[in-house]
Image 1 (cartoon, rainbow, N blue to C red):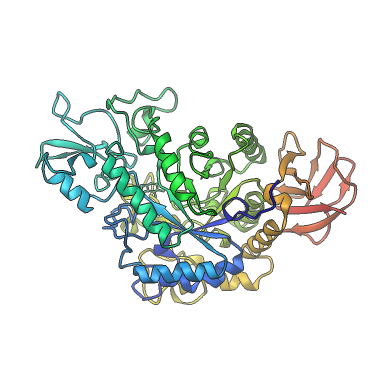
Image 2 (image 1 turned 180 degrees about the vertical axis):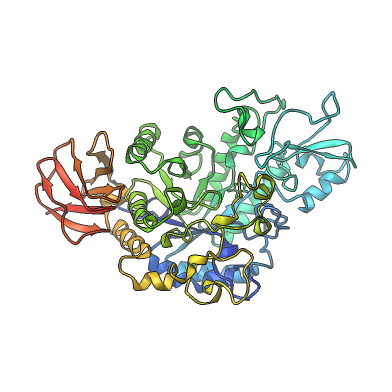
Length: 537
Ligand code: NOJ
């Protein structure tokens, strides 16, 4: 095993949603200078890299995931000079910077699309996916938009439809066009030359669609009354096409020109993740299984085992407990009086896995979804599906720094309301409380950094049919650690099925006790919501 510390493999990545992290100029929207002012906090937290959701010029129909210029900064976030300063100051603290690259689509106001739309014979017409109407004059095929409604928009000016996997303000690029491909590779080079350490590729599985534009067949299973028609189809033809292999190799070669850079791809599921990582593909693909797992130890164990079993040896795992698209973990696992206790166990679960952990800003405070009224919702799918689905605004509200006005996020009213619990749930309060969620994250991150077993060790589960909690060994040549997690609010005796490799243990960390748990025969006693890490003596 190599002992070289690789940030994207041994380290932890922290996702910042720039609009909501720190506002430095009082316009109610977070910005790059704000992030820069908070670098000391991030260094103290102990993360290795920050991933910034899109910061490029955008009309903000999808809050930056609709880019109108790939090689500049939106004025709401700052300037290129401020970006350079952020990168330099992050690097000075040992923090890498990862940019979000949205290459499946642009904004409908990107000059490329304006050209493309201007006429059938425009030189950029073929940069997007234009098709004649179907025989009935309707859309060319049955592809749906992920955000609801048809995936095709009719353009009266030129008498054709264009395809958009997301909003109609986010037309999909044509990756089969060599000029498009060359341009986007230039974009990567532009940011790499500016010193960024890697990329997060948005919906990387979607770049290529079926060349013949065949209809997707209906889904085989699942309720027929699902909210989105999108979910009632098998996505055979609108994504994950074989042509992608070659593009991945090209992107990888570019990124690898300087050692120590890395890319992570957003894909739909685990099987896809396997196709997108490898020596000629991406370094990492998100594993979203933890986002979909209910708070039951058996389900988490199975998710880990399923992943470990599938991933080829040369591919490195990742784990995600929260992001800007999903309910806050503290909300998913049950808001209420025990949500902080659960959030600490969840932190221990995430930070003791073999695989790069991704932390979503604010999850280290146990932030919960912010309740918003209909007229406060800005996210387009939330507007469309309210009240059945509120969209993603409730998980994108301002970071809670202090008990000051607007939680110390801004001097003025923020673009989304601050969660009303900020007076108690904020960085300042958590720093002062040794039992806070934040201090649990700090301790666990510090331990992960210094522990070869937590970073690279293999995982061996000790409770074969877990009901109340998990126990597992992380074993590396240099070190073994035992992790045990009680998922519930009562004391439990975990029954260990395998023999323990040692009789005497010392406490390295516990969320609930200052003593080594009592181990009697094959039973280990854990306190309510206790997460414990032990090392043999
Ligand atoms: C996936 C991103 O995570 C999401 O936030 C965005 O809306 C879509 N891709 C479209 O870019």
